[in-house]
Every structure is written in C-alpha cells, then in structure tokens.
Length: 597
Image (cartoon, rainbow, N blue to C red):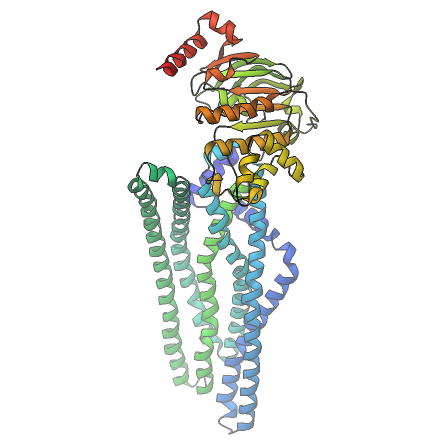
C-alpha cells in the first residue's frame, strides 16, 4: 500500500511514466472501448475511407496534368471532375459520422468512467474525505474526464488516419520520384526530435494547470457553500482574496502551458515550412536536370502536403494525448484509492439487540497523535449512555467507530458480543441511526429527505415518522406540503426544522442503536424542548449513545462517561459523579454558574 502511494506521488512530482505504467494505463483505457466495439469499428472504417479519398485528388491532378490536358481529352477531365465531386460528397457524410458518432462514443466512455468514479467514491472510507476536498474531486470528474473523452474519440482516429495517410503518401510520392521522396522523408526525424523535446515541457505545464484548476474548483465550492457566513461577517473581500490567490496560480500555470504550446507549435510549423523549401529547391533541381516531368513536379508539390499534414496531425495530437492521459491518470488515482471492504469471512449482523462493548480500544487519525487510548466501555442493550467532556477529547471519534467508519488501531468493538470486523459494514450501519449537530439534507422535497431513512417506505410510514418527530404540522402548513423543496442543504429551513427532519429520517429507519452527537447543542431553549421530546420518544427501547454539551440534558442517563485526552477519566450516574467532585462535577458547576449568570 505504501509502495503504491509512493509511486503515485513520484508520478505527480516528476510527471514521468515508466513503460510498465504506460502499458497498464493503456490497458485500463482500452477496456472502456469494449462495450462500443461496433461503433468504434464503424468510426475507424469511416476514418480509413476519408484517408483513402484524400489520396484521390493528387492522383487525379497528376493524370490530368500529364495526360488528359496535354491530349485535350476534355471528356475524361469532366468525368474525373464529377467522380471527384461524388467522392467529396461521400467524404462529407463520412466526416459528419466521425464528428457526430465518434464524439458520442467518447461521451459514452466518459459517462461510464464518471459512473465508475461515482460508484467508487461511494465505497471510499471516511478517511479519504478527511484529506480530499470536494471541489478537487469534482474537477477530476468533470474537467479531466472531458479531456479523456476527447482523447477516446480523436486518439485512434488521428493515429489510424495519419499513419495510413503517411504510408499511402510515401508510396505514391515514391512512384513519382523516389529520390525526392527520400529527401522529404529525411526531414521527419528533425521534426520528431524538436517535438519530443518540447513535448516534455508541455506535459509538466498541463499537469500544473490541472492542479491549479482543481484548486480553483475547491476554493469556489467552499466559498459558494459558505456564502451566507461570508455575508454575515461581511468578509467578501477576504473570499475574493482567497479566490484570486488560486486564480493567480491558474494564470501562471496557464501562462507556462501556453508558452510551452507556443514553442511546440511554432517549432513544428518552422520545420514544415522547411519541407516546402526543400521540395521547391530539390524539385526544381530535378526538373532542371530532366529527372522529373513538369506534370509530375506539379503533382509532387500538391501531394507533399498529403504527407506533411498527417505527420503534423500526429505531432499536434501529442497535446491532446497529454491532456487525455493526464486526465486519465488523475481518474485512476481516485479509482486506485482503497475502498471500504468487508473481511473475507464477514457475515450479516441481522437484527442487533444493541449491546455495545469497547475493549481496550486505541485509535489515531495519524501516527503523530493518538485520539483514543485504551478505552473500555460496556453499554447494555436498551440503556442510555452519555459522553461528556472538553472538545477534542475523543467523544465524536467513539461515535464514529461504532458504525465502523474508521478501523481501530488496537482493541475490539463488539455488538451483541460480535466483533465488528466479523460483520459486514452494511449490516452494522443498517442497525445504527445517527442524529448529529451538523445536519446534511439533500436538495429535494420534504418527503424524499425523510424517505432517505427507508427508501421503500410508504406514504403512511413517512407521515407517521414526521408526526413522531414533531415536524408533520409544520410540513402541512406549507403550500406544497410534503412536496416542498427545501433548497441546498435545507437552506429554507430553520435549525430546529432541519433537526426534526433528520429525526424523522431515523424514526423511519427504526434502528436498535441510536447515536446522538450533540444533536441539540446549536438550538435555542424553546426549540430544544420540542426536539428533546421527539428524541426522548426516539430513544425508547433503543441503546442510545449521547454526546452532550448541555449536561442538564443527560442527567437522567443510565450512565455517564467523562472523556478527556482520549481516555475515560470518570464513569457513573449523575449522582455518583457529582458526589466524587471530579471533572464532571467541575463541568456541571461551571455550566450551572454560566446559566445563572
């Protein structure tokens, strides 16, 4: 795993790929053509016919200049002209097919890659999203995959047409004058050397541009999501400053990439201009010596572009190739991220009863700092267990370990006596309901946000869940009732309404284990009382783990644990902890004095 990650970092840093890595990328890329073999074959056939038709014009030109026009055979001139016109009409239809269906093939492949990426993102663990910004992930799914789809369409087409055109052109030019053809061919290596040298700089420049673009997307996503906070604190200038910083990096990266492109194209154009000079001088010399007829010389000048153009197409294709391959590499980096997986012999947990045990559990988000150290907990079925303590002590981490969002470093977590590693992730999470302080709601209707707790729920079940969460009456007061759109992240709802909607979701799920992670800490007292009533009903008959900021809300818990510095420092009932005059007593007295004040 570490070796794999090191390879990726080396690739990003140096922009170099080994031959083995290139072959691996190519195999993965080619696999996306498999479902579209028929369309691919038709596209390539059309491309081949276009290449063949392109040779006809110089051939007809040579015959007309050497034979038909000198011999005044105007009937054949007309026939050749009409034939050429028909072929060009066919070429027009073929080009339409290539541009339309060829691009659609790229779109189909892009859509499949996007589906694969989204499906893979759904399987990645919490830890992945702790270190990857949403905007950067979105950039890989949109900008990068667009360039990949362009490569998917134009890549094989450009290669096949260009290679075939070069072979046909070389063969045809050789029939006119082999020595003049070899002179032209001798110039190609110079073109390739210049292109290779400039292409290496262009590769790094395009990679830097992509990275800068991802930074802009991440900054933009963050700023737009937090626009209400920005307005509340009148910090628009600060957000503009942050955006311009990323925008400046993008301008610099683009400047370097266009500089590399400019050198690449101008260098290549200069070499092709040299081709024309060589043809003019060498052809003129052969014509002067009588080694070539005037008609052949004219046909050669017309035909030499048939040789140069596909060579230039191949060279210019390198720019698109670098764009597409860089985008596919970044796609593969996401696809190669390790997904969450069940243990080989993991079994379905079925319907759990709700007994939770922590046995000497330690955990760290990184190697430098432990978050939990040797935590032991025993929460019997149906009991209400509260976690209190200072921020950063490890309370939320304990909550995240129960649904197996993270793997423990050492120790065991048991549900009904079964170690969670022996149970499938889906079956564990199916038995757990979570209500957090920071509620995430989807940009959908009231109904669909509640239904998220049980996708096959009936309308009656949804309404019952809303009633139990004390949100039904509010929903019915709205003009569209349960069909009301709530806006992005529930922006049209108050904090209490969001919370009650999330509680309705959990009522619908009906899990045996309930986690309340500071579910009411951000609410006013009146709203908190309403929601606390809904929570009290929700807790009935379930094993409940409560992370509480306001200690008054957990006085009646069956047991309370004080978490500080990643350890359980005190544990007992409210009365027992108050009698000890320890940390819980100090926290309670501090809040009591603050409330009185």
